[in-house]
Length: 158
Image (cartoon, rainbow, N blue to C red; front, side):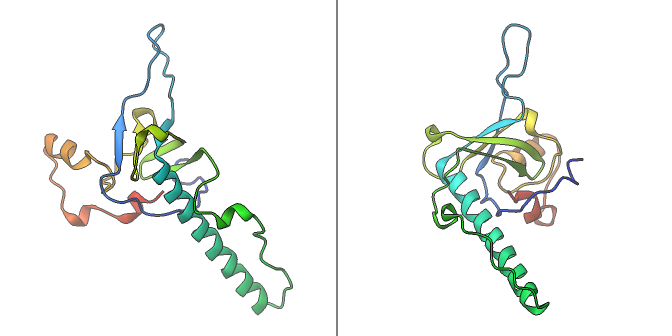
């Protein structure tokens, strides 16, 4: 189901901005309290927002061109003023980043720069990702030696 659910690509994350962190587990009963929920910095969520807007605007432009060629009279539908702002008006998003899937919530404490914290519970597939801070190190420890051809920007797409 992971590979077939619908999603809108936003952008390719820069190298070394993604970090894998443990889930928060309840001391009584061992229940995972952060199941499928990671954190993202202000710059990170703004990057996702701006990239998503560009994708939506490009799709709408393609539709208008197709509509005009086919003799239709539909107009662009994006009257949403929030699409004009470069600061994300939301505090979370649901999505997929490479082999991770779930919800990412804004955490202003992460400071400047694009920082994305993924939980173990969000990892669905192991993929070679440039944006993954310690992926190469983990692979080296396991005896897996990566070369540039092992990477694909698709894996780093939000």
